[in-house]
Image (cartoon, rainbow, N blue to C red; front, side):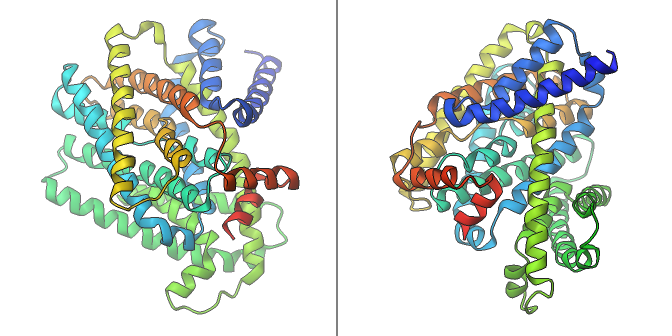
Length: 425
């Protein structure tokens, strides 16, 4: 492809991504469906883009997109809201992940996969997509408590998926006894959190000396990349490290108080830098996430998938819908969450699969899991089906508080980041 045609295509995809994001506000059609559909047209249908070359870049591109999503999610969380809603969010994330894992693994076993492969398939399909949920929750007019619940679940689901795949990878490649592997995973997770919090507390003080530099936000992004890479090389969790780094940057005051380390010296300057950093990361995330979903449509040839995979995909989506409803109702009955009818339906439908499932499917192929070559196609079918279900099932309106919040945001003309911050305060 010539440079002019390539730039024209890039420009078209960015315009399409923006239109798809705006279209969700009015039509409730998830942008992932529009972008993946565009990828299918450009790849398998017209061969404008070469699927094989795109597939070679899949692991690195997926990891970069995942990092940005987690960093933005961390910057979007407020520690007070997290502490108030952590238990419900964690219970919803763990319970939802476990039930979905069992459903997907069960379908894999019935479909003829050996049990290790069925377990990996369950891990691939179980986590809901933080890449989709985190940007959407701010547009649904939810109460702050429910919004925080959804954000926590989206962020934790990604981390659960990555940790579970790391555990499975160690087991499949002869990583030792299950107990030792589990203990190692827990220690690695704890190490990731400690290092990320330490770097997140030190970094605002260093940026104060670089306040007049034009590319300070690029430098912070570089620190996040370094943190991810260093954590992965030492056997820790890069995903958890980046998430905690973002949370620490956004909540320096509260974390210092919790650790009894006194008031922050960076003060208002650090908060201003973090707010601008959030805007920069949000723009970068939008760019990379948009290209990733187009890329996903390019690399998967749905015409070549066996019909049995379509049947199994429908079975997984149906089981996800039924089990998700059961989980939400059970948590309500036990008093873990309190939802009105609209919020209940929203939380029920907020279970799209997306980026993390695609990345984990690629990782399963890399690990050489028997039957893993079909996992990316399987994941793509579930991604499309679950997003269609969400598009149809999400309430068109909202609670009174939600409608008021949306009206205030639209009237003020504030961006997503500033509106999120104002509501959390």
